[in-house]
Length: 69
Image (cartoon, rainbow, N blue to C red; front, side):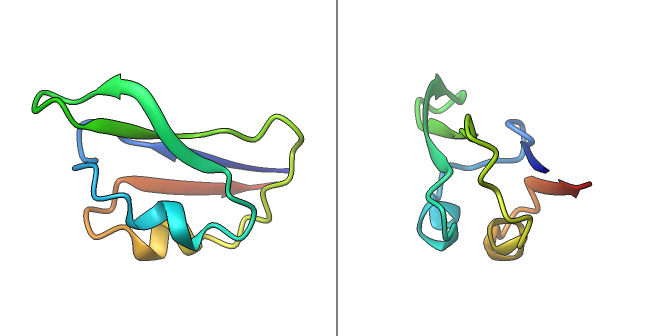
């Protein structure tokens, strides 16, 4: 099982990570940052995350960390 953590204070809501997740597990959140942009969240109810770290590699602000078992 893998886990992704998004550092909301670093995320600038560029959404580049949304398109690179092969399972589509990163989605826009209902939470906004101080500028009013929607942040992203990791949504993996069925433990589908591969731990490929494509989201973390694509993030220009190093706001995503991937943990694998």
